[in-house]
Amino acid sequence: MKPVDVFPGSRRLVKGAIPPSSLLLIGPSGVGKTIFCKQFIYTGLLVGEPCIYVTTNESPEEIEKSMKTFGFDFESYKDNKLFRVVDGCSWKLGGESSSEYAVDSQHDYLTALSIEIKKAKQDLNNIRLVLDSVSELTSLCDHDAVLNFLQILTARIRTEGGKAICTLAFGAHDDHFMNLLRLTCDGILEMKLDDSGEELKRLLRIFSLRGAKHKTNWTPFEITDKGIVVKSETELRCVLCSKLIDWEPITKIIDGKKYCFDTVDCANTYKKFKSIYGNSFE
Amino acid sequence: MNTGKTLAFHSYKGGTGKTTLVANLAATFAMMGMRVCLLDFDLYAPSLTAYFRKTPELFLNDVLAGDAKIIDVLVDVSSELGLKGKLFLGFSSPKKSDIYEIEILHDMKWQYAAIRRFLAAKKELFSEYEIDYVFLDTSPGIRYWALNTIATADFLFLLMKISDMDIIGTKRMIKDIYESLTELGSKYFIILNKVAGASPIHEFNVKEAKERMLWETEVKKDIGAEVIGSIPCFCDIQFDKHEFLCAINQPKHQFSRRLLEIANKIKGIG
Image 1 (spheres, each protein chain N blue to C red):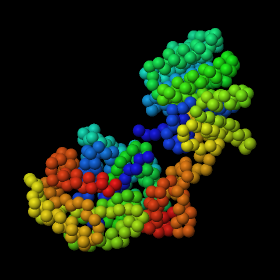
Image 2 (cartoon, rainbow over the protein chains, first blue to last red):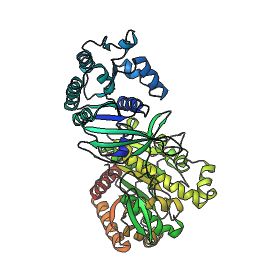
Image 3 (cartoon, each protein chain N blue to C red):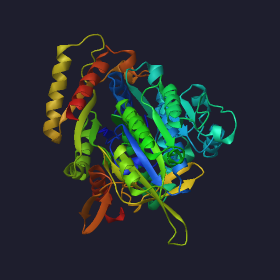
Image 4 (cartoon, one colour):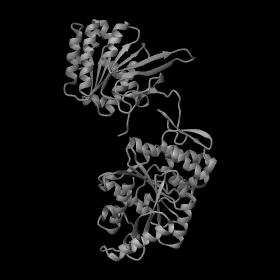
């Protein structure tokens, strides 16, 4: 099966497989956290993993409409019950939820949300879950209760072999709460906006990820009509096959010139072509 | 990470039975459960479309031109052949205009870009489609795309008949090209095909085995390269109007058995 990103840019930013984990995605409003989460869900569906989207900010209809905008065709997965929305938002809008997993009031909100999540995932294994957003939960419930809720949720996801992403608005919480949240999750993804140049830039980095080797530098990304595309900060390509080199290049000095290759095999093949065609092969 | 291997099948002259052998050998590997991709890189005289009786919409020529992805070109024949593993085929275009383009029309800049596209596609086969072996059927002789394909291979198999013309030409080719590639990591082997003097159609006979061994020893001594196998000349294969994958259709045929021996030796070397 063709390998795909676990989350946008993961194959470029993480070396090897990503262990079962809960990730906290921190970033300012408008940076692209929600799209990131929807893409995480959609790529999960594509590889046959059941997905649950826990929403506190958008109704199920808004989520579906937005996913369609990016070409994330989830309908068949929804029909097969592989894609489920736990609706923690519609009650605020005063309407009926279209989801069979819905919280209907603010009363004992976290308990109700836990029950609905449990119902949604009871017949599923190895799930992907998104919780968008933790910040909204803190506006409805006290911080300790939210922390407790997240600790239980992330621990269950991890032990069940799943993956989760929880979003958090940057700058909306005090340091104490942020530090406790960071400890709760297995990894921290950070997003930021950079408006120092002529164009607004979006950047992503993996601050930490337990059990995996990863890059830690800020990497630019764009929101395209097909979702988030993570770019390379250097765009270093193999001299032979032109493949983008994500990790350390293989460097060789050939006829006094330094060349970068994707693999040792590419370096040797390049030398073979040089031996056949001489310096005309560049 | 997938550590698939590239095997190129080459010869000094045409008529060595290269395409029949490589198609059957690739099928033998797939019968053994491997994930195999056979690419027709005899771009100047394509024959796999005729051998497999396929009329694909896209060709390897489109990959070289940057107009198609390798996965869109491949034809999966595993189910129709009832294989345990997988056999994907990549055809080159038999159209006169396409052969003319590759042979004459394009300049070196285009050709080098095409080499890079080919290498990227081959890498994709290993990394994204978990292919164990890529088989390259090359053009005979010292021609541009024959050299390109052998330069990208881990293992090179030189097919030859027992004739002075083949022996002298093969020796020259080894000296001029193969030895420099060997210094850079390639390994090459001889396969003797259409060995005359014994055609054991009905049963294995001792005389034929002795003959083959003698030839293998003599060629090894003369050319200085390891002979990985030899296959007698089988009239029923050579003169069949449409010989088709004897290795699958007649697994007990001596030809199929020899190929199985060669396949096991190749697996042993990498």
